[in-house]
Length: 415
Image 1: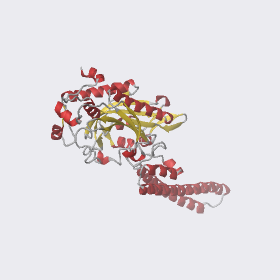
Image 2 (image 1 turned 120 degrees about the vertical axis):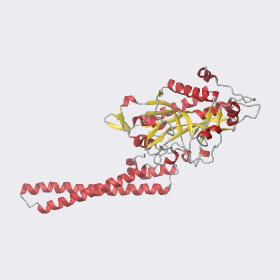
Image 3 (image 1 turned 90 degrees about the horizontal axis):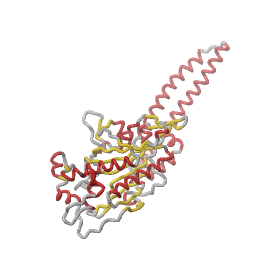
Image 4 (image 1 turned 135 degrees about the horizontal axis):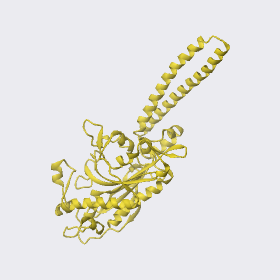
């Protein structure tokens, strides 16, 4: 959640930053209205409270001097009723502002480039050179079917479209990739954790998926529980409503989970193959840090995800997201896009984001900073999306006969 104190102190600055992220003007106007209403309610309460304090002092003087206090007592009693009403109005206006603020995205960093959509993202660098094939490379669904690694039709039979079943070496490679990624991340200082794949509503509010993106979540009927869209949700919320010691930071974690998304806003996109599935495997990086070190941790996370791809000998590039392509909770994001020769393009395989104190404020994650409690900064990123990594291996390591060579770093994981 955006800092409401900053909003009240400098609305124009907040408004300008939100406008860069393409927040609807009417929403910003409504935010301003609610903010002004709260200011008026606070002023009214404070005025009545000041009058009450003044009359209380006067009441004491009257009694000390033996004066008749009946008229003054009536005024005090009347003012108490007004104070109770004013306090209730202030509470209502505070709740209205906070409820609206929950639907407002994070403000982008000043360094984030302006842009309308993914076409305005800025490439940072390319890593490794794509292989030149002496034949026309196939797309991953052709290779998957030819090698018997992935069965899309049986996935539909068991569930619905955008589900798949992995067989044989396909299933073994997914397991190998998960173990390889977890081990790689652990060696980089990210402690492995295992978390539930089901979370409550508060957890999803904490990381920003709710209330705005409920249509994209799988909800368990009759319960306030949801299947997770990413391990970011349970891992970040491990520390919800806690005050950490400064010495504990940074906390760096990695976790493997299945992930579940309805992809409600992606109708017609990537309907074939494994790029956009309703259920998929992912290894995640999550970190909590002090504000002054979060950029350093961010760079570590980007490097970790990129180095996994380098170890797998997969060409990729790093891209800074523009304001128009930045996610709801993110203040800054670097996407890592892997080269897919079958599609002759780079496709996203990881997004690493610094949310600053946006999620921490929603989830109430703080640390003791001297005598005061300060919001931590939270960060998250894929390292990596397992299915997309498998896709990249199939397309980049394919041979002319359709067979696929296994990357050397995975051989120890395949016996």
